[in-house]
Length: 197
Image (cartoon, rainbow, N blue to C red; front, top):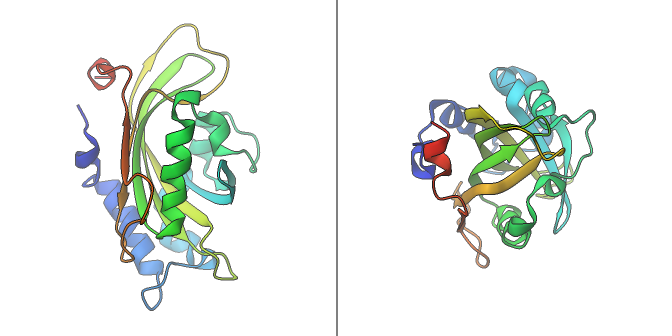
């Protein structure tokens, strides 16, 4: 069973955070132009860039082929919140808003069910990125698929967090948000991680 606290030490997520740290200048949040192919090449297939346009509007600006394939997303511009299960929309709005308010990082562990009936346990590390104008409205992420099994039939659409979602904010040098939840847990299927073995 993979616990959220164990994921903080995941080798690939640690390496991703280190690449993000190296993209920083003078201790500032990296600017999007500093997220280069050379520095992040080994992460590209599972990397994403989201831009916040509103409280429940986080649009994919970029997504690696692995992310696109898993989400069956054919172009950038999809709203991440459109994939979230309705039970976690309110808590997600507060938690995701905190990522850019501090700014801080975040780690999310979640269930994700695909239209064809594939169910996965995945985790995403999210880190703040500034736009060229200095506005901290973007998030850089790396997704790791941890487990997979087949369910039949699927719901006909991608659903994130129906069976499992937990998250924590991570201090990346600016502290944590003053308001809203620093972490949350939505576990209607308490045996989800055991079933995903």
